[in-house]
Image 1 (cartoon, rainbow, N blue to C red):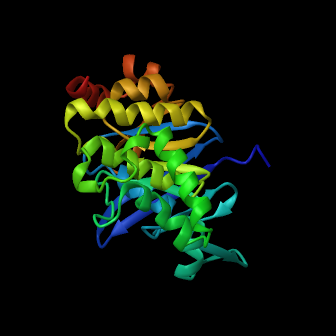
Image 2 (image 1 turned 30 degrees about the horizontal axis):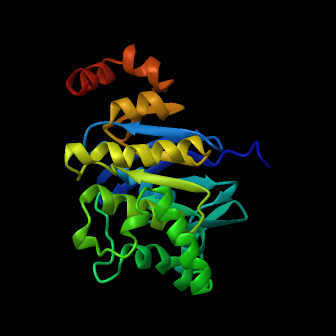
Length: 255
């Protein structure tokens, strides 16, 4: 089944009341690819990410991850929303890293990473702790395992958040502007971890304003505005030679 896209969005739309935030988005991400989503605030990038793991319910269209319809089941050609418990089961396979780190303040770094595999998957604590320490080592924080979030920098907290998402052994990682809340000098350490993930073959969708990261790491760059995909393609091509005037205008402000 390796020819099945890891993410397939078909005519995905999302409205909040009368405000249509996503307008029939169709995209696919192949296994092992990195897709970067660019665009101004309010263009629908974060909403699209949240639809992929059913944190937001689609208004129309369909989303599949690894060949499995997300958040709905199809019966006789009609879609019915899943029970929240089933949607939560699907969400286990999709790691998500937010702008804000959302670490549990009363738990150490290693305890934060251990929490979900122990609680959600019921894995034995000793085994989970060993894996959590390996993951903290992978994100360069082995020596901070017993620190509480309050004693970690923003960049360190975000790296713990990445390790926490990886602890569930996801097949897909979603990043929603993971560096936008960080001081500029801390951005690089988080991007380095993400580059390492990409080179290890993790499928990733990244909402970001980090153009250098997009150029270096992404397989495809998608520029969104007003809830639609305006332009997409090879990152180097889109960034250096955007075809659409809306893309040109946006890039002229951020590059």
